[in-house]
Length: 145
Image (cartoon, rainbow, N blue to C red; front, top):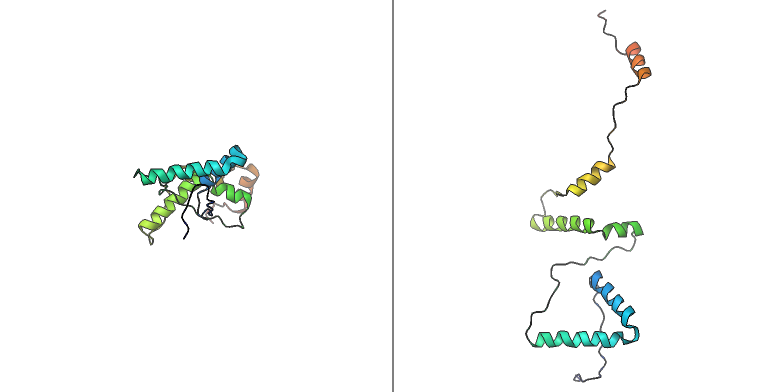
């Protein structure tokens, strides 16, 4: 295997599970640096390698999980999944499934309850005189025959 040297081209693919935040950051860097993007990435790569050689702890994003979104979703569904509240609910579901896969799943979110209450409007009792007189004439016979 050939050794690396200054000026050597190093290429690699980004993993499929690369977090969306990282992909967006890379896109912004590419737009900002344009033709100098590869040298900017190279500088950052070398700096990270030097930190690792020096024994400094490297920040890892172990507290995040990237899940690919199915391709057959509508743009509205994708937008809903990317909402921070939806992500929080999905996180709660995952924690509950990991702790006890056989238990009933409960979502403890007052926001979720508000959404459910908004979807099911309460029907108020309507006092209609025509309906009341019709019911009295035809159904409500209190006379003891």
